[in-house]
Image 1 (spheres, helix red, strand yellow):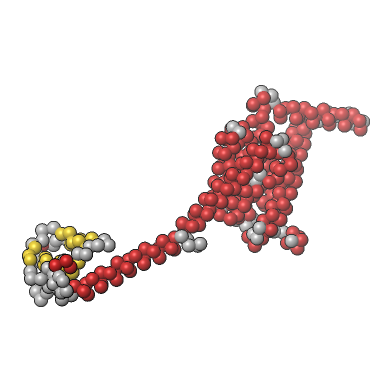
Image 2 (spheres, rainbow, N blue to C red):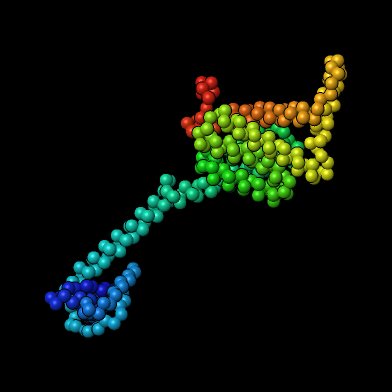
Length: 307
């Protein structure tokens, strides 16, 4: 092993002794002394590895001196301890990164969980559509997004939703992926984000109801475009006919206006979405409480007593 040692001199000029152990049987060595004058302003760069230490400099006069092996053993000891200390520092840094509470471990765990939730949600929606059992399991399609948002934050929930939509885009095409986003994806993201931020149930149900209603309207518009038929007009016409027959049966001689029809349609849509979202809140609260996440939930008092 080549050892480079710095020795001070009486005239304040640094000397660097290069000792080659192969030339010393017990205490024999060859020293290479490098001296420089401070006025030169030369830069000294030390580079070391596991076998040697190199000195790189510019414009340095080099002079050979007599062999000096007095401090070779001490130099080897100091060099070995220095290399061992650097290795221990690197190993401790890697151990901190790979620890349970380390940055690398947490990011890897978040990525794996988001991918797993996206795969479960996408495959469940795909199989439910393929087997025509979507109406029986539709309440669980937003659950992976909510769990991901509660565990890792709003950004993780958004990534889970996007990954699920991309999976459905590959498996079923753009229509199914867009339907999932409108009917379940945005509702799950809104619910998970509000729960993560500690919002009350009243505000959460109100916002999720609006998101669900807008998603349902978007789904109706997309379906109308695909089948080349105005489904919204058909719905309003049927409501108008039903009310007309009801008024005739009651002996009321009036015809409801279209504004009344639209008001009734919007009210029924909001009530349907509100009841659905309320049931989702209760179901997901029970599910997350069983998973040990009850402390991170903001539950109403009556539900806390029941749990």
